[in-house]
Image (cartoon, rainbow, N blue to C red; front, side, top):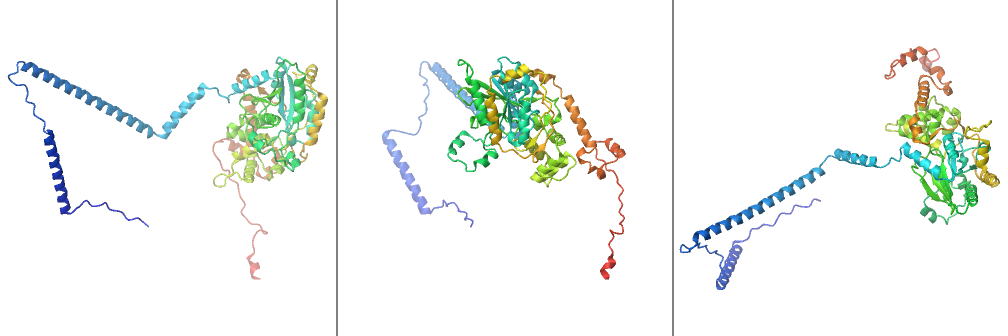
Length: 554
C-alpha cells in the first residue's frame, strides 16, 4: 500500500498569541536598553570630531591619517585578490578531477595499455625463444646428471639430437639418463622393445608419473585415509611407478662421489608435455612444480630438493625447429596453440599418421572423408556447439590435441629393428655413459616397474607412424639461422593436396562425390569465390517408384 504524502506543519498562529509574543519581545528589548544605560554602554558609534582647527600641525596629522587609510585599503585589496586566486585554483582542480572521472573508458584503457607495454619492454619477455634457450642452457651447465624425459608413446620422436650432443660436449663429464615416461599408455611388449633399443646408447628407466598429486597442505589433511581399492587407484593414475628405482640410482651415484663435492644436481630436460614437471612432483611427493596439459607452462629453471644430497632442476621445454616434419611440430611445437589455423593443421597432420579405423573406434565417430568432417563429428559427439547448434571445430581440435599430448590417449610407435648409433655417439661414449651406474640394480628396478603397471591392450592402442628424432633449438644463433620455409612449403603442398584431392583413406566415399578434372580446373580459377556447378538431375520416376492410386479402390 502506498504511504500517503505527509504535509508540512502550518506556521499560522492566532492573533492573540502573535500579539503576546510581540509584547514580550518589546519588554525584553526595553530591559536590555535599561541595563546598558546603567553600565554606560551605548550601541551608537560616536562621530569622529576630526582635527580641531586650532591644532598646530593640522595638515601633517590629516596627511598621516590619509596615508594610513590608503595603506589599510591596499592590504584589504591584497587579501581580497589572494582569496580570489585561491578560489580560482580550487575551482580549476575540481574541474580537472571531474573531467578525469568523466573521461571515456576506451581512452583510459588505451593509456593503461600503453603504460603496461612500456613496463613490459623494460622487463624480460619470458615467452621469447631467446629467454627459453638461455634458461635451458643454464640447466645443462648447472647439472651433473641430465635426465632426458621421453614420451613412451613416441620415444624416438621425443629425442633431440642437438640436446644430447650439447650434453656430451660440455665439460665436467656429465651423465645422460633417459626416462621413458607415460608407460601406462603403451602396450607392455612395445615398452620392453623400446627399453632394449634405447639401452644400447644410454641407461633407460621406465616411469609412470602420478597425475593426482595435490598441494602439500591438502595432502597432509588426507594422509590418514588409506584407500581400500589401492589396486584400482594405481591403474587410474593415483600411484607412481619407477620412483624408487630412479631414486636409488641417483642416491648410489651421489654416494660414489667425493665427500667434498656438493649435492648431486640433476637437470630434467625434454620437449613440452613429456612430463618433466610431473616427474619432479612424483619424486618429491608434493606439488613442487606447476604442471598441466597446456604447453610451455614452465618458463624458467627451478630447483627442488628431493633428498639431502640430490637436487632436481626443472627446465622449460626444448623449442622444436621449424624445419621438422609437420607431424613432429603438431605434437611438440610451442607455436601450435597460437592460432586457429595451426591447430586445425596439426589435427589434419596427426590424422594422416594414424589408421582411420582405429580413430573411428577410439572416438566413436562414423566414417569421415577429411579432417574437417572428423572435427565436426567429434564436436557433435562431445557437445562442442556454438550459437545455433553449429559445431565448434576449433574447440574440438584443441580437445583432440590435448588428448594426444596429455596423459590420456593410448597410442604407440614400433621400435627400430636395425639400430645404429647416431653420428655424435661412439662405443667409447656409450661405455662412458653407462659407467658409474649400478646396472644390475637398474635391471631389477625396471622389472619391478613393468610388473606393477597395468598396461593397455595392443588392440585398443592406436598405431602411430613416428617421424624420427625432432630437431631442437638451443642457442640464439640457431633461431636466427633457422628458416621455416621448407616445413611451410611442405605443409602448404599437403594442404593443397587435401583441398584439391580427397584423402587416400576415403577412397570408397570418393567414387560418387569426386568432381571431374575439367570441373576442378574451373573451380581453381577463382579460389576466393564460391562457384556452383550445375548438375543435371533426372526427375523422371521409374515404374517401380510411381504410386498406383487404383489399388485404393479395388
